[in-house]
Image (cartoon, rainbow, N blue to C red; front, top):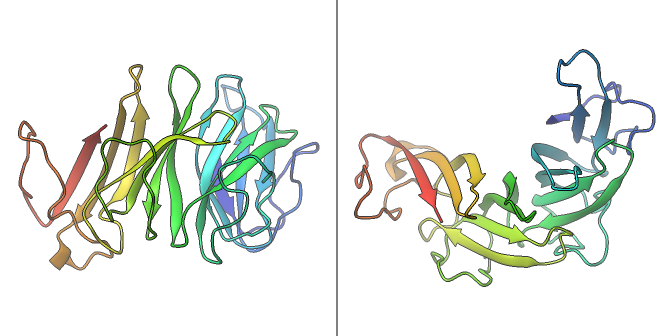
Length: 238
């Protein structure tokens, strides 16, 4: 499980990779046996500022990949050779951290982001062991090796090398806007390496703190090509 806490007495376990809080809010990682009868391990995950762990996935080696958002310039585990060795700015940026399956160590971590606001809300693996991330940005995300992207949009997808050393590709989708269109709710990579994203958003005029779903790309064979109500659910396949 991945979550967050502001508690300085969270029930971490001896031998976990971070047994004391970093400061402010921290992410927390917990592992249970299948019957949830005990706690296998629990650890904080965070630096000296606010951190939040939202999602995780198990890599092909059994290690745990955790993703979320951070304000910490000293996020644990960050090292040379990853795609983001320093926090891009003093606000909020996404992160990915690889943690040993037994919770004893953080193997590596990386920042994911731009000079704007960034958060990672999805992480998944394909059958070849490559991790994919999905999230939101308010910065100028630069597509890499991506035949399809929608310029100046604020939802991103990236495929990373398993050691987080480089992007295989990254892309953005949505409408040209200073803020994201949708709140992402689900993320999946299938056996053919197709990527699925779903999320929800409102009309621009509806008062939600998003750019709205008006004008987002639909295909001619979509089951809905126009907005049915003041709110809409979008599903994307890449």
